Length: 462
Image: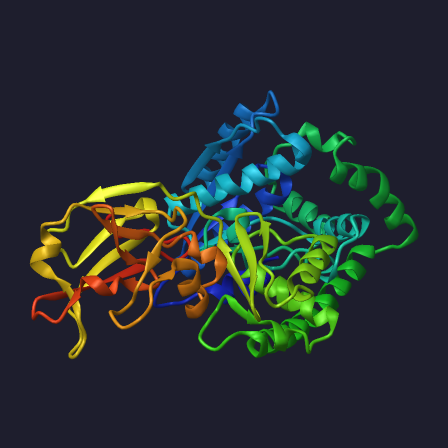
């Protein structure tokens, strides 16, 4: 057991120059009691920081006693202890099991952020891995489900923490080994009465199905684990191929733009893997196989002039001409916001999702008369329709839609581009430019430029 802890997930993260801060997800049950005892010995030998975190769900009348038990056991091992209390609330379609799991990991992620933890360790073992793989099979899993749980990975969607590693150093041990270890070291642990309730899916497998498997297929856990290792190796190879395909289909310099023509040269299976990889980069749940197939059909089979938008979770997938793009769903823009320019180089408009910059024209370029602009009552407005603008005195006045089409501005971005009015007259259209009748060659000319916030970004001062 000690060998597993000292050479497994912990060692991968260790850096002598910057020791990691570890935490054990400590429920008080046998598995986590063994892990905590092992880690306590390990960190003492290697001068590392270790904490114990417990989550109180409130589902059992004994939950309060379990918190006290975990605290006392942690103190006996001289390990700092902290606990989080969660309420499941309305479990909806997820059910108690899935909701409790989600809330538990969210709480553990919060505790890790509070204590600046680098690696969160859980006590999942080989029997848990077998249960997980079997559950995934029963749900019609793909390859990722057959891989089961990984020994070391990040889980930002689960833990809400991008910089946190989740490690399972006991994953190659079976339950019998843990029980023997607990007996040898006389570890005190709790027994959660809900583990005997067959209404919960995992309990039904553990109590009714796994004993039959053990009877007819001794050491089946090892075989499941071997399958998981084989699948992991295959997934690594598949990931390399997908990365190559994604690089082939990605527009140079654009991390969220794919070329439809290049994508269509791939087989359907490879297209699906590229789309999954592309969606995964935006940290949203993966669509089902059927949903992904529908997305592929709509995005790739559309006419070149079609405007295709598919909403998935918090993102939107768009097709514009021969390009596919992903954007985060945005709130509607306000209708207008009056303002006065007092000479700032940049003004933030968080409600409109961007900054308005005021810059000195480059040599040979024209701009707006600075003194005139300082005296104007200005208004930032969202698009109302019917706006027209002339970019230069020797060019025709055109409607904004025509400008957008000429400039190749995708249709879904257009609704996010505001206008600046001086009184009732259109002065500037974001993404297009200043109306030519306001341009002058005076030395004090000013140019205007709109900078949209990227997904998840806000103004530093907002």
